[in-house]
Amino acid sequence: MELRVLRYFLMVAREENITHAAQLLHVTQPTLSRQIQDLEEELGTKLFVRSNHRIVLTQEGMLLRRRAQEIVDLADRTQRDFAHKEEELSGEVAIGSGETRSMTVLAEILSDFRQQYPRVSYRFYSGNADHIKERIENGTLDIGLLPEPVDIARYEFLRVPVMEEWGVLTREDSPLTALEVIRPQDLVGRPLMVSGRELVQNELANWLGDDAQRLNILIRYNLLYNIAMLVKSGFGDALCIRLDCVYPGLRFIPLSPPLRLGSVLVWKKQQITSPAVGALIAHTKQYLESISDHIQ
Image 1 (cartoon, rainbow, N blue to C red):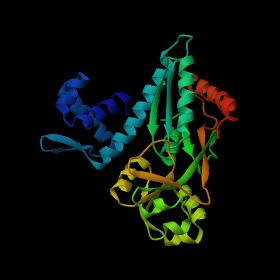
Image 2: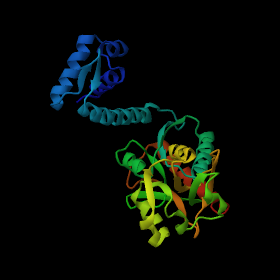
Image 3: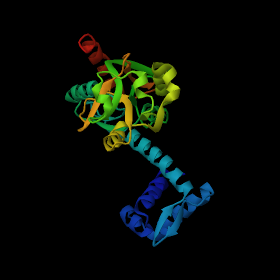
Image 4: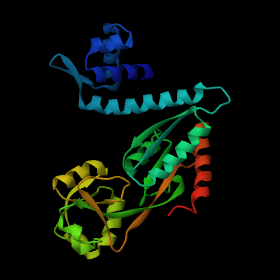
């Protein structure tokens, strides 16, 4: 399976039209059709079906599109890493981050690093810790900023000196806003939305104690922004971390006893990194050491 053919496949999947895709790829339509047919024969499955004057992906085609995009992205990144022979550091660093206040520290690190190495470029992915770890494992991300709790046995890591505070996001007109803090018994019977990550659920279960079995959980989520819109609509309250952003009409109320967790910056153990990634990791270590005594 050639990289060129995967690029052809991705273009056809995007355009949903062989003729349009052939024009963009600067090949003839029969040549492109033959390449797609050969790919289907090689894989032993149909990748496209015709529907209303366009072609759409089959289930198998959708799976290949995901895998092909990862392969092409990784190949492009590798080519960029080796493309520059000048003494000045260049290349691409792929970073993933969850929704966390520690992102403010990472943003400062990247800004400072950019001043020293302006030719380094970045690709950023937002997702929960499990998705980021998966992408680090398959090589499409170099570094991940992960909110705890997280299993870091397979990774080198740096602890970010910022604590994430857990609480409840609720509407301004909710009866919960009469409380300064939220205790486990305050959540019994209320419609709730909680993180879908198993390790987070375990941490919350420990905080909730016996009341964990009495909760009315409607949704398990991975990222908070869309859930905040559901809170605003009156769908329910969200158990979440405090973020440095404002949701109009909503209020964050901390938990009691307090639940505070940290974040870690991770990369794969025994991983051979590009010069740009190695330089960023070294810079991050120095930066965190310099600020660790000043951040609460």
